[in-house]
Image 1 (cartoon, rainbow, N blue to C red):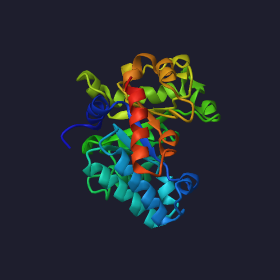
Image 2: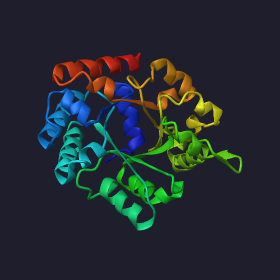
Image 3: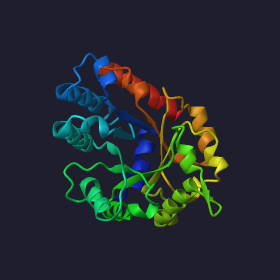
Image 4: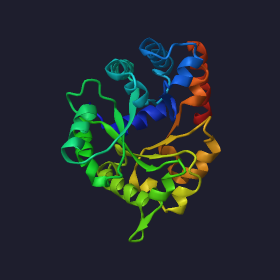
Length: 280
């Protein structure tokens, strides 16, 4: 890879707009497409999404759990999804939220980010709640291989605020995560580029970014904002939530787009509509 992930993401967002399309083959969606909830149905659903999204959006985000539920055969489908999107020059963000310590975190990093990973995504979501530095093996390996990470910072679930807004020594947990990402992105920021350590901040967290004093621009972080569309996030709310950092935000939409399936042309049309809304 000739460019770090942050630079590639910036280019993809300029070319296609700031949409990240989700692939979430949970039972309800798969069956709503008239497919059986089994490995053949999973494969048909997922590859239809690949056909619809490849080359049309900045990034695609498969949710690992919905593939893992089918065991090794489901993971094989996920690997095919990641491989086909890579071959189509479309960035992938694997939503797996891995997080551990020591040799276990190193193994997770090698599995998803390493030079010899079987079907590596361009970026991986990770959880910092064993401590931001517990993720160091992933940060270091991603830097070596040109891949990226999105660290959970502010989630929209009701329980999230009890942890993420908690304050210790005058700093919220979320602010400490932003501070860590800023440190890892310092070199990219000095070049005037977007860093490769991003943050996950829900599109529906309201004024939390401002309330907690999070400097996303200074941290040079790409922001993955799940919840756009059917879950309540709008273009207007993205502006009010992220303010000056709006240009760094990759809005993730799954349900609103996937509900247009199973006909590929309808899925493409809905993808284009959502992408156009965000570009405007």
